[in-house]
Length: 80
Image (cartoon, rainbow, N blue to C red; front, side, top):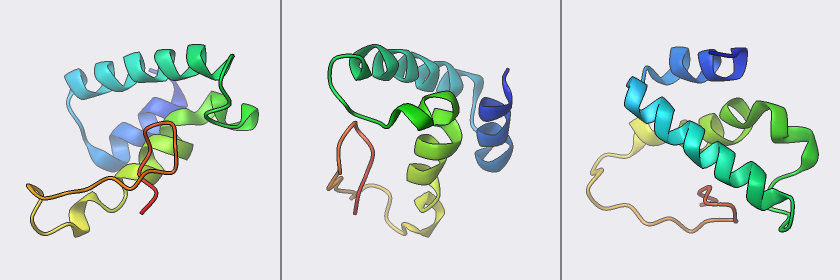
């Protein structure tokens, strides 16, 4: 596990399965980013910290987790 993933897992304490799914999404994102500018080149090496953690940080503040809408800003990351 690299430092980026370790940071994310320490902060959010997610299951191994969740980390595996996020790694698959990361691979897809990096592949897609070559043809479509979804994330900045400078954040490619720290996707877990820069993008996944940034998106997940408000999860505990959401009271009714069954009703969530993603008004995203692109690349599958919530923006609002």
